[in-house]
Image (tube, rainbow, N blue to C red; front, side, top):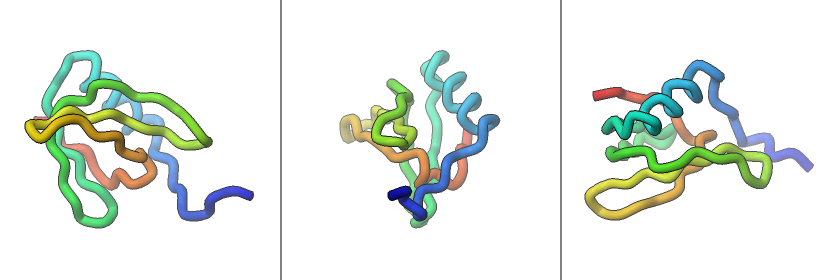
Length: 75
């Protein structure tokens, strides 16, 4: 059964994330719940029918479901 709450990101946004990861550029990610995460994208991958990223911040690394991403702010 498909997860109806999952909202994939656009190809354009995915490309921006890949470029930021490639260049180790600091980013600010705004999530759909209003949370803001800042750091450097270490990896992007697909698993379990979803897209994910690993973000390294001053507090350590975390994995984020890209379906929760609302906006990318490049710094």
